[in-house]
Image (cartoon, rainbow, N blue to C red):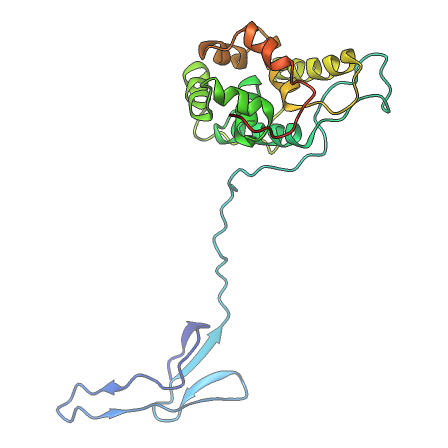
Amino acid sequence: MASHTLSALPISQSCHRLTSDSSSSSSLALPWRLNPHNNLVSSLIGNKLSIQPSTSKPLVSKHRPPVATVLSSLPTRKPEGASSEKTPKWSARAIKSFGMAELEARKLKYPNTGTESLLMGILVEGTSIAAKFLRANGITLFKVREETVNLLGRSDMYNFSAEHPPLTEQAQRALDWAVAEKLKSGESGEITATHMLLGIWSQKDSAGHKIMASHGFDDEKAKELAKSMNVDVVLSHK
C-alpha cells in the first residue's frame, strides 16, 4: 500500500466518521492500533501511516523588549586623592534613577546614555526629592521626553541599543561632578539623586541642561534645590 508521512500530532481516540460517496452513505468508525514498529495501521483499510517527529522550531524573537537592569553602583571616575574607603556611595534612589535612565535611552534607541536620559531616569524613578522638585516646577517626564526628541531627533528604527548604553562625555562629567561635590561638602551620607540632577545642570552645553532651562529651571532654583542635596527621603508637601 502507499505510505503517507504525517507529523506527530495528538490523535483522538474516536476517529471521524467516514461518509461514503455511494448511495449507501454508510459510515464506519476506524479502530486504530499501534504495531510493534510504532506505525499506525487501520485494521479495515490497511493504510500504513508512519509518524515522524516534527523538526520545526518555535519562533523566538531575536530582539527582547528593553528592561532595566539592577545596578549596585554607578560608573563614576575615582576622584583624585580619594581612597576607595572614603568614596561615598550612591543612594538606592540615585542608582534606580540611573537604571531608568539607561532604559529610557534604550527605548528611544539611542546609542548612549546622555544627560537627557539621566533627567528622564530621575523622573521615572519619581520618589526622590529631585523628582518631586522637578514636577513641582512643571518639568514632567512627558515634557522631557518630547523635548528630547525635538532636540536630538529620533534614532533609526532598526537600531538596538546595548543593555548598558555607554555614557556620553557630558553625562560622565555630570556624575563625576556629583561625587566631587559630595566629597567637597565633607558631610557623611550617600550621593543622592539631587546631586545627580545638579550635576546635569552643571553641564551648560548638555541636552539635559537645555531641556531644564527651557522649562524654567535656573540657577536660583538650583540653589534652592541644593539645600536638600544631602537628603534623599520622601517628604510630605503641603
